[in-house]
Image (cartoon, rainbow, N blue to C red; front, side, top):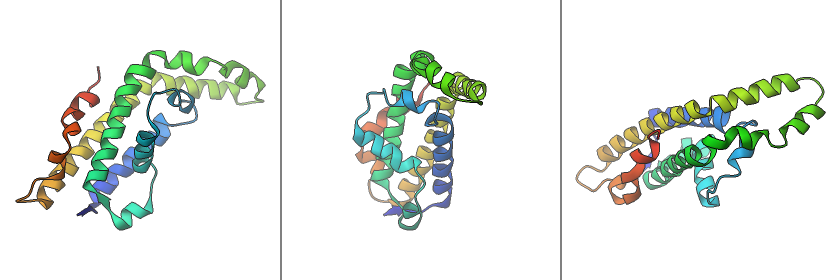
Length: 169
């Protein structure tokens, strides 16, 4: 069964917008590349955060959607542990020479970069909250569509640690 629920699509679009604008933006992206995340996980994250008309027409498979949710939850956890404590240092290395070579706008870029760094923790928390909301709605839909059968989320043991990955620690 595929997921073609408009509320799920709306939440995914909100997650995508938030991720692209506040986490995977030009000021933070360099630091994201230092994270120890396998390419397969990046592909799952990209699958959920890049708007795709394919999914709107074909729908999401439950298992695929849960894998993408888990990948983003793992990303959030690792970003809090690996990036957040050293984000300013990671992004300041080499940026002075880049900014000093730019003509005009360098002060604005510096301010925007500082804003992205200062808000990174809050933006991760917002992403975690949105992802949790998506998960709860997908589980509800999963139960509704699999009445009398075992829902898909119960077949994925890794989902039991989702809450731990999303809590701000």
